[in-house]
Length: 268
Image (cartoon, rainbow, N blue to C red; front, top):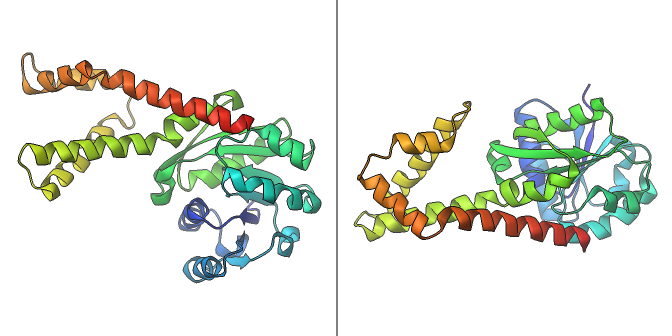
C-alpha cells in the first residue's frame, strides 16, 4: 500500500527522488507533498512534477505518513524542533549525511521509527545506490517501504548503522573521485594529442564500458584488468606508473579520509 510522503526540503536530492518515484510509478504526484520555503522552487516543483507544495511544515503534517527529511545536516537543527511539536506516529526517513539516528531520537523522542539513508549523486538520473539502516522501532514493513522509495532511483543495500560513515566515504563521496579520475583521463588525452571533445568521448565511454563489464557478475576487477594487460605491453606500462604514484593507496586514503570526516560531522 502506498503511503503519502512528505518531503521536508525541495532541493536537488528531493527532486531526484520525486522524479524517480513518479517515473517508476511507486507514487503518484497526489501522494507527494513538499515543504519548501523558497517560492520559486515550490512553483518549479509543482509545474514540473504536479506535486503539492507548501511553505511551512505545519501545512501538511496531518496528510502524510512518511516524513522524508531532505535538508543538509546543518539545516536539520532548525527542522527537528518544529517537527517534534507536530509529530504523531509517522515513519521518519532522513538523507542527511553524517547525522546518526541518535540525533533524531534526542530531538524527536525515543518513540520514533527512523530510517537513515545515504544516497549518492547517481540518484539524479535514477542510477544511484543508497544504503539504509534503521532503529529498533522500524519494522520490516516500514523498512520495505523505505527501500521501495529508494529503489525508484537506483539500487539499495541495508547495513548496520556503524557502517554508514564507511558508506558515506565510499559511495556518497565516490562520484567525486570518479569525476576526478575522468577529468585526469581527458587531460591526458589532450596532452597526448587528442582534441578535448574526442578525449572526453573516449574517456566517458571507456569508464562506462568497463563498469558494465562488472555489473551483474562476481568477477573480481583484477581479473578483468589482467585480461587486458599483455606482458610488456602498453597497459602494463601505464599500470606501472599508477602503482609508482601510489594510485590504489591514494584512493583508499581518500575514502578513509571522507569516512573519518563523516564521523566528525556526526559527533558535532
